[in-house]
Image (cartoon, rainbow, N blue to C red; front, side):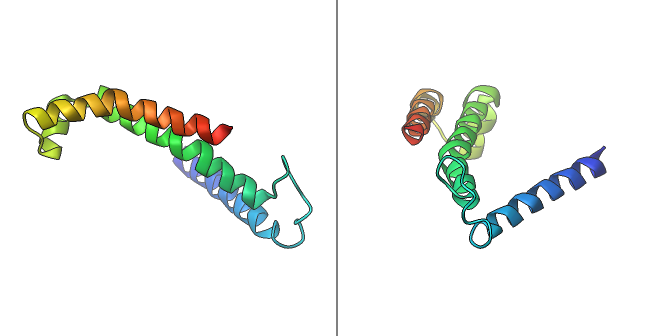
Length: 105
């Protein structure tokens, strides 16, 4: 149910927040992959979640949404519309994959 999912999600986020807070104090010696809990969450968010979220968003907008809706919303016509489609469908996903892979290594 929605209520149960909300409670579980809220408790999970609260626990992660408390763990990140305590990683500056009494849990400063608790390390995973050489990182404390705060740094681990920060690294995971910035190097994994952000690029993958951007990739998912651009793939959804470029390949799943109706082209006419997107071009109307952005106010694109003629050559700008073709450029947008080229960049959104091919260039941006390749760039985001490169950012994701560079963050891993």
